[in-house]
Amino acid sequence: MVKKRPLPPELLQASKEQKLRYFKDIIILHRNIQMILERLLKNAIEPDDA
Image (cartoon, rainbow, N blue to C red; front, top):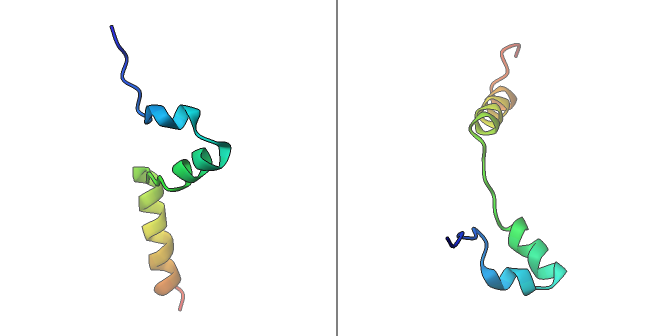
């Protein structure tokens, strides 16, 4: 049985800088984090006590 790797195989041999760049370019928003971000932005633009 062969396991699939989610990362490109060449990344295993890449330099530290290349690996860091690879992961810095990946953004994954969690559902709750996205919801909180939207609420924060809404409250910053339209605060209830203004």
